[in-house]
Amino acid sequence: NAGVTQTPKFQVLKTGQSMTLQCAQDMNHEYMSWYRQDPGMGLRLIHYSVGAGITDQGEVPNGYNVSRSTTEDFPLRLLSAAPSQTSVYFCASRRTGAHGYTFGSGTRLTVV
Amino acid sequence: LAKTTQPISMDSYEGQEVNITCSHNNIATNDYITWYQQFPSQGPRFIIQGYKTKVTNEVASLFIPADRKSSTLSLPRVSLSDTAVYYCLVGEESGYSTLTFGKGTMLLVSP
Image (cartoon, rainbow over all chains, first blue to last red):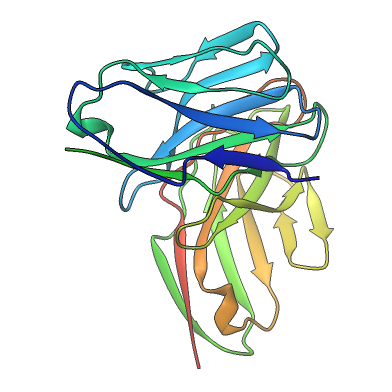
């Protein structure tokens, strides 16, 4: 039982490049979400999913796309990276009715 | 979503009890109060959750007064390893609610 796995742990992109941050969980959790955390800030919700095939926007969705084709995976796509997207990205999941969310260890993204 | 207010930072010494209070004046009837802990370069970790009165687990206690407009996370006998950011969140426990994190409270434990 690996929990929530995020890859890669570190990434440097050039402005305009696209990439996908991977998130996988092996706990059969229905709910998954993506957050970004900037220095000295709390976490801000980007997108979330309540189950396979269902996604919705969070607080800061612009510049990001998501899809949820399986229960296990919830990738986050950066369409055209911008320096403002330099941040640490966290994926989280939760089983309906459970206390608390399980977070991944994060992906540190730098856009130059 | 109910907004929360908590101190930006707190200092303590090893072995002391630390109480972090969170204000949530517009908490809704269906909302629960949840606390997370975050160490540098790690994702947040669930600590405790409660609805009213007192909840205790092996890590912490959560005190919630009758009006539920505030809550207090109590960490008994802190150690250096308790140095972290602590977040108070308010939202529905069940269903598909989203989490709203504030800036949290940076707890620094000194020897």
